[in-house]
Length: 253
Image 1 (cartoon, helix red, strand yellow):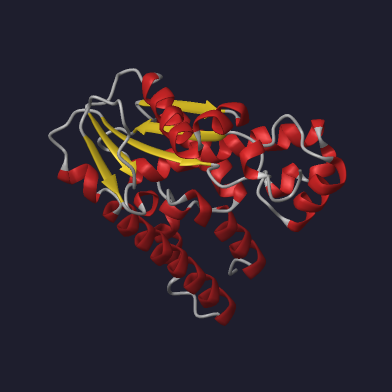
Image 2 (cartoon, rainbow, N blue to C red):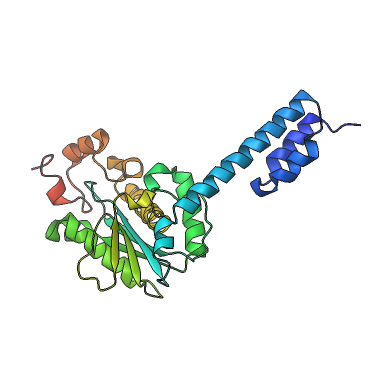
């Protein structure tokens, strides 16, 4: 007696992507239309995985180009533009044989996917570092210098220390090791993409925490950026201690 289609559907749902080939082979000769639709679904999942593996391999272009270096570190930051909260930099040294899929510019990923990748990156990375510079310091030295400071903090936390930095667009002052600035590097380098993810998740978690302290401003949703809701609250309630005074001059006196 042929297996029921509903049971085959459940089997497909439970089958991890790397085992789909066996599923396809098992049911390829089943002529029922419903089963063949499930086989097609499995093939599409396999094709999607193959494309992601190729994309991830292409993300290693710079890591392969500079393969003579032992510890290659990706650097990125988040939070240069918000009206409130810190700027956070991430630094990540991935293993040479890194095969983590779906790493990308953190802005191109859903919050759930970033959280999932954060755990994988933190577990598999050779080393990770985070640098955080708060609003007062940003106001004191300006956002660009604060970004550099956060990046230097993140690098200092790494053990082992890197012997090459791949940076998202910038060259960091007061750093002795060689640097390679890459425009839109978080979408072109797996190391920079990983750094952007851990920085983004870290900062987002901080802003959710600040939302519990200052619930009027919607920090959990706007993450400190200048949304209409945030600006309206700023005008109504005034600034909090986490607002950047140099960023809000147009909204409050």
